[in-house]
Length: 164
Image (tube, rainbow, N blue to C red; front, side, top):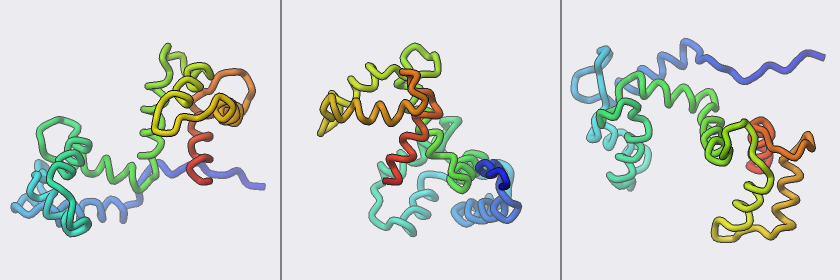
């Protein structure tokens, strides 16, 4: 039986060219193909309106802020490429999980303690879980039974929950 390959970590040449073509199609001020080309709020708005006609300017600005790594208020090609690469390779969800895990890992030891997660599950949100429901989820998340939830266990648990 052959070993399963891990997730792809690199884009194909065709995907790289497609990202450049999409960026250039959004870029309407004559900077097409140039190294310093950027997408302004207006260019992003025009592009987004083609996909989601009723998206408010404030939401477009939030998207730009999320992509804009250097904080200049515009999206350059490297920033655009980075977010598109994550989306195409399915890495964005993993980044979100890692950020959530880091917030829950209070002592930064690479583990979440069940009492901390239980407290969160039973006290936060519109419909907090009961102690019994939280304990059941924690038992499922702690797959190796060591009493701690590692990043790998947390990611597997969230991935499994999302599929169900």
